[in-house]
Image: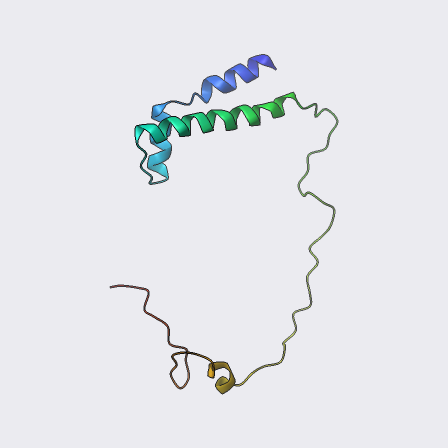
Length: 107
């Protein structure tokens, strides 16, 4: 167990190279001060997750779901419909058949 934990930390060394790689993959930029904070936070996360190695799991069945409940879905029924006029009556800007909204895609 100790050998596995030691190997795990050797593989997951938190250094500037790893932080730079994560920043690049996430398309983020960090200054040196922020990188130090990120390294500290990542090390804390790894130490926290590593505590799971101490949990005794012999004889415990793996869980696929948290509970035994199955999806409980409501029957798909059509509800009361409203007319086009009623749907558009409170729209701030409208066309005879459509809601008008601000343009969000620029060419």
